[in-house]
Amino acid sequence: MKSVLTIGDGISAWCLNFYLTKIPDISVTQFSQNHFISPCSLNSTAINCLRGTQKGLTPLGDLMVDSLSEFIDFNQTYQPDGVFEGEEIHLFNPNHQYNNRYQKPIELNGQYPFKGVKSFYREKAYLISPERLKGWFLKNSSGLETFTKFIIAIEPLKEGYKVLTQDGDYYFDEVYVASSYISKTLLAGIDVNLDQYMKYAKPVSGTYLEFEMDRQQIFKRYHIDSDICFDMEGSHLIFRTSEDKIIFGSTSDQSSIEYTNPLIFESLEQIRTYFEYELPEPSAWKQRTGIRFKGRKRTPYWGEISSGLFVVTGLYKNGYSFAFKAARDLIISQRTPF
Image (cartoon, rainbow, N blue to C red):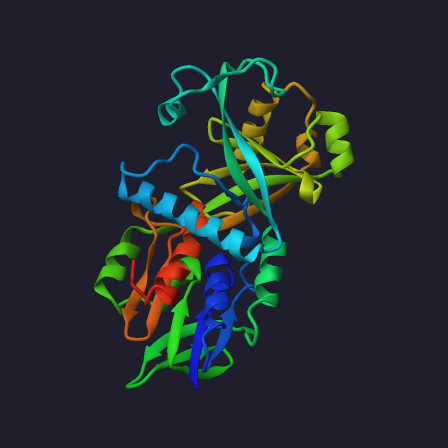
């Protein structure tokens, strides 16, 4: 029986585990460091929406469209827990850069509780509960063995790989590394193309706010009874009625990977001036931060970098769609590398 290891505990690893455990005659083990470093996938606003992106303009745009299509197919086929269909409302004023993405914005005339905004565009969105989706993947990845390990290095052998951890060495026939920016250290010097990619890749913190409020109170106070995201100049006010919470975010800090970002409260104050109803005071929100890994020009990287050694990295803000495409490319579609 072939032994396979996945490293990581974010959406990429969940997708890989799901497909790998469906292949006969292999054993699948997962090592993660989530007791030491919380994965970004569990600290994310987790919304899948094209936001005006179209095919035929850029390779990244093509990949974003194809990846969302892969996610939608997966959702329709397996109906996982934690995925809620909703909508995203893009609010913008004339001459805003987002106007170029949409052909026919709709004039805002009381449809939504915002003032000082001229027009909007409505788009289907998928609002995801990371915890519930992870639970579904674990339940539906039969035979998967999971362990918390502090991984030191990966060494190639004549056949397979030795994985060095703080509490011992382990041996596997194949290894899939889906551990965000930790991949930069684990895989250095193995593949020249990956090394070149990692040269320009970097961790970026993304901070957002959460406020718990049950669905009835959300409707009573804000007259909103569905899962909906309001997008205004890059800030997102998200009403997740299916989870009894309001989310605001996220704010990226390209120069820091600190787990706090005061800029998020400046953005909150800005959107409060446009929103017709009173939002919770800044001190009432719970602040959360995820450390994402950004490739050059937001481009992800996945493929087989050595015989039996695979990587998925640099998914940045599109992890909940790119991960599904990566898993299909590496496992379902004859393991064709991206």
